[in-house]
Amino acid sequence: MLSIWRSLFDPAMPSDNDDTDDHPSIPEGMTRVHIFAGNFDTEEALLAYCFDSPDDDTPEPINVDLPGAFVDTTYVATGYANAVPVVLAEFFSPAEQERLRRRIGARNSIVVMSEYAFGGFPYELDDTPKLEYLGAQLVPLPQ
Image (cartoon, rainbow, N blue to C red):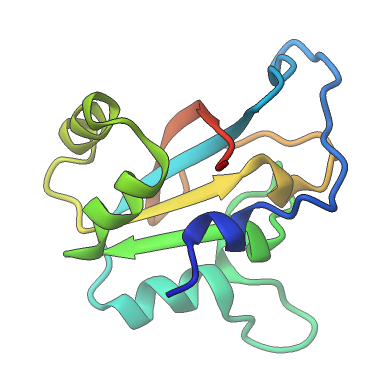
């Protein structure tokens, strides 16, 4: 099984450590991930929302619903139902997993985006019609 980390972080991609008011620099050995939670009828619906373009001229629904950012979905991980704890465990300490589980509540899906998803461009994230933005967290890079 490929690690979720491998799909989210490309070590060949230069890191963007420029300070901005909204996105302070990332300390050495860390990266920032953004967490969303929502409800989807099926895992296929979650995957379609995040990864499927309706046609060649239209971006993925998640990109349409996040007008303040262009999201390269190569750097997005999803978890549906029983996979939510698995995805949380890939990124967060046990204490942080518990805190996030309380915030996720009864919702059945999560989306985790690495900072690399924005390609070094400015971005602004918020809730979408299908997902609540739970915020950003710094996490250690995988060893």
